[in-house]
Amino acid sequence: MTATLIDGKAIAEKVKAEVALRAAAFLAKHGRKPGLEVILVGDDPASHVYVKNKEASAGKAGLHGAVHRMPADTTQAALLEKVRELNAADHVDGILVQLPVPKHIDPLAIVDALDPSKDVDGLTPESAGRLWVGRKGLRPCTPHGCMRLLDETGVKLDGARAIVIGRSNLVGKPIAAMLLERNATVVLAHSRTKDLADRVREADVVIAAVGKAELVRGDWIQEGAVVIDVGINRTPEGKLIGDVEFAAAKERARAITPVPGGVGPMTIAMLLSNTVDAAEARAEMR
Ligand code: NAP
Image 1 (cartoon, rainbow, N blue to C red):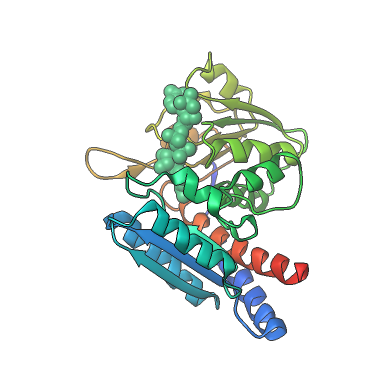
Image 2 (cartoon, rainbow, N blue to C red):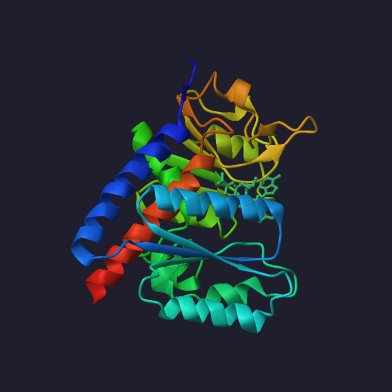
């Protein structure tokens, strides 16, 4: 079997087109665009590129987007003040503090200060708690994007055996919760998991979110399984590769995401989608 490639770029474009329609409807109904504002502290070049992309994508989809650039020596108190200012601003539906923040700032204190109704990154304990207890709420963008990829691929999750490798708060844990919410039977694996190859061999759905190049070998993949590779790793030659041995895995899987071009493009698309969700939920609350 040669796997179908799950085209994250095309699916992300579809999500963005849906966002644009919803944003236009929101504008017509409420007289303003859904608003996403990003806070960027310091001069990490990669963060500047990410933030520029987010701002441009927001504008393209008909959202209001703005970036608050703050110098690297910004104090934690000043950053908290900026978060509070955006919490209070009615035209702001989504707030994103680009991570990492400089070392003298505690990222947890910043996340804790976010108004959960504007937490479009889904990182606050309130958002995580809502996910685990099955309540409506804002879901972290990358896991949310992985679920959309599975749905677009037509994977039946009800009763499926799924393995998530990696248990970070950002990716692994929320994906496990989302799969459970959809009635998959979930194994959540991590660096202490014994017999990882055997656990992967039992899975109908494999989600790899580790950050170790080709950790998941192709011959671990069950014939006909669906594979979502979240990992981004750079080879010594400068090539980007995933956590799954792609060339061998695609000969066994039914469907698989490439790296790049799989999960990556979904993250910004889901951020925009979450912003419209937040705008609608806030408008409804009023
Ligand atoms: P992270 O916080 O470093 O977590 C990595 C996880 O992998 C940990 O839970 C760790 O286990 C586990 N792990 C490490 N070695 C392992 C091994 N040998 N076997 C099994 N599990 C192992 O990373 P993250 O933030 O979740 O990100 C994971 C990957 O996804 C990275 O490559 C990152 O760049 C990528 N990523 C991509 C996107 C995107 O948009 N495409 C977004 C976010 C992240 P322990 O908990 O036991 O240490």
